[in-house]
Image (cartoon, rainbow, N blue to C red; front, side, top):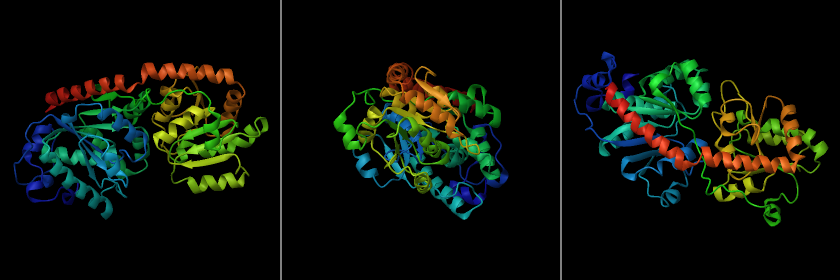
Length: 431
C-alpha cells in the first residue's frame, strides 16, 4: 500500500495496530502515534450501493440492516440525488459519503485520491461512533477502505462477496492484488450463494471457518400474487398480450440482448408477444439498436427504472419472468434477487444456467434453467411456458411456497445476526 494513501502524522498505523491483528506491517507504513479506538460493539457497514440507488446488493443490505438493532449499526452509504427524501422516511443511522469512485486501483491519481478522501472520512466516523467492527459491501472499493481502517485502527472487518465482483477482478493484476489483500485480511467472508462460495474456495483460497454463505431474500409480505387485472394491464400498455418481463441493470451479463434475439422465433407462435424490460444501464443504446435492426419496435417495451410500487404490479401481471443471464469474461450473476421477487408474486421464472441463479428456485418445479449464450434454448423454454397456462400456474404456486419457506427476510435476518455475532467471537480468538 503506498505511503501516500495512509498519510502521515497522527493518522498513520502503529506497530501496536499491526500486532493486534496478528499480521506483519511493512516498516514503510509504520509511523508515530499510539491512539487506538476503544473497544466497542458497534458495527459500521460501508456500501456505495444503498437505497435509493437501485441494485440487488443495496436492497439486500437495506432489508437486513433495517431489521437489526438500531443502536448496534451505523451505515456509511453512497450519495444519491434522492437521498434526502429517502432518509427522511427511516430511522437508521445512515451517513452519506461520496463512495462512488471512477477508478478502483491505486496506480491512478483518481483512484488514490478517492481512497484517501474516503479513508479520512471513514476514520473520523470510526472514532466518533466508537466502531468495533466493519462490514464492507464489496471487495472493491469498500473492502480496500476496510483493510486500511484495520491497519490504522485495528478494527476487524467482514466482507460481502457477490460473485461478479471477484469474477471480474482476475482480469486486472492490480485488482487481483487488492482483492487478495482484502480477502486475506477479512475475519469473515459472506458469500451470497454456494456458487460464489465455491468460486472463493477455488480461485481465491478462502475457506474454512472464515467463509459463510448468506443468501439474499425477499419481502414476501409485499411481493404477493395477484389476480389478472385488465385495467392495470391496459395502463401498463400490455392489454391482453402475452408478456415476458425482465428486471435488472442493462448490462451484457444480464442477457437482455439474447431474449430480444429470441423474439422472432417466439413471434411465430405468439405474434403479439411483448417483452417488457425494467432497468437502465450502459447497454440501453445497443439494445435499442438491436430492436430496430430486428424490426421489433412493437414487441419490446423499455420501461426504465421503477420503484417497488411500480415494479410489483409488473411482476404480478406478467406471464413469465426471465433473467437470461450468462457469464461474460468472469462477470456472472452471483444470485439473482429478482428471481425471488418474481416467484413471491407467483410467477414462473426462467434463468440462465450460470452463476448462482439455480439457488433461487426449485428447478424445474418453479423455474427453468437454460443456457443463454444463444437465443435458441431461451426461445424453446418460453414457447413451452407461454403455451401452457396451467403449467405456469402450478410453477407459480410452487415458487411462492418455495420463497416463503426458504427466503423470507425474517428467517434470513436471524441467520445474519447469528453470523455477525459469530464473527465477533471469531475476531476475539484471532486478535
